[in-house]
Image (cartoon, rainbow, N blue to C red; front, top):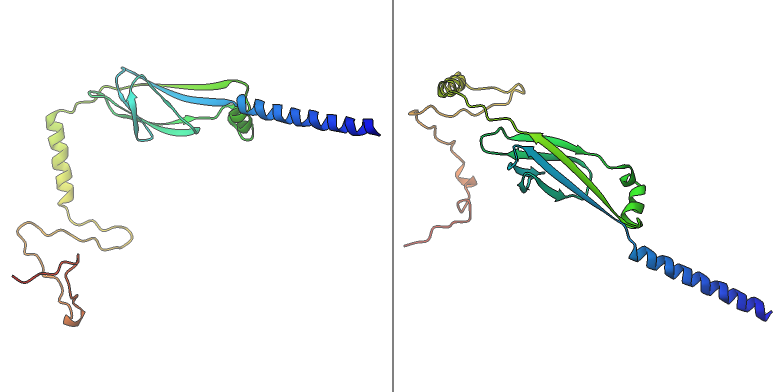
Length: 189
């Protein structure tokens, strides 16, 4: 009888030691996935914005946390601004529920480096005469009259230059506010 009690105490002790070791290993060897996006351009030196956050000039890199579609905008003088909705799909080990294991219990750090490259197009320069012609065309379209939306809503029109401004409608004196808007109350001299 004495040996059975001693045997069960020994098993309980081994169980506690095993649990403690598993806990220690899980804390000490926690995995980590490092996600990094690198943006390159041809020619290099373009300003890069990822989701409207400036990250630097190409080539440049930024860490990210979540997969999905990112808006990448490249701006360089003398080149057309390029805006791209770039999908960044998750790898197989980052699909739920596998992502819990790879993020927390992997035995080594996992690096997920993504690189995207873009070719910038030289900016198209329009002749001055073409710009003036298009401006005159747009001015002519705006003078053709008021635009009425399809929903039938009334669109206020701006008065023509030199035309008298209509007076606002009169209000009932009993409905007038005691103080002007904004809380300003004139003081005596």
